[in-house]
Length: 398
Image (cartoon, rainbow, N blue to C red):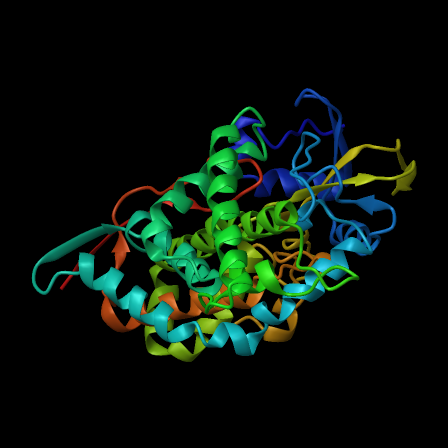
């Protein structure tokens, strides 16, 4: 048995050597180091199998190691048919055409953020996480939801705590209460405006608050609507920031990649997708089986937590050529097979928005600060589920 746990220091610092060992020696792994039994699957074939079998593998006990229930409306805790009904209600808000309308605002915010730390002469320094990647996803989310940007900093703090709580359940209670109170008040205000016949703010929050949802034409109950809105923010905040910092980390760590991108900016969409494959912002999430099952000869009792290791599947040589190389011009058809947005009915609703954010940021950095280079060691996001740079120092000569 391979000795493995997602919170072991060596695995936490760099999980990919451990994933390689799991794939070759123990593709279905069991550990009791985390206070409960946790199984993991690491090969692409098993990851694919679990993600497609939504009848057997349930979301109702949450995506974390510990069982959780954030209440009705959180689609990360939904199974069929409820999941499809809720997803269908809001999916048009996340389609490519709707997301594309956010690009001018996102680009303007990106340019303003870069201009705030860029210098006209001499040596410039910045932290690409704090100064650029952190605020952008929440800015886009607030615009999509129709929430005033003055509330952005509060959302950042709440989302950070709630992401951490996925692995450490004792964290996040205060943040959840505060965020729930804020969202509830915003939804009720919109329902009151609608009831009085007054105009509503543009955005998804107004849509959720008023759109017919129940069989008798009533909107989604407020508790469910609150949980849905909160889950959408949490799911997209840290992951989109990590996409930006992971991509820039790899491009600048081997600066020939950055030079290639400067010479061929048309490769930026490829780089965004290769970064997602090579460094997925979510290393893996958990499912729970409704009945006892067998994977690759390993018996898994009913009600077991199974961590589906997207990041390991993305480096599986049976699915990708040269999987441990960051290939700037990797074939887009091959890149379409990665698992970083999950697979099947739970494929990430925010995938188009994440891709747009990554593309816009890389385009503006290439155009505005081509002299970027690393200025020290980056540090990673402090969660065993997530993989991103929480601190990415850079410098350039203007």
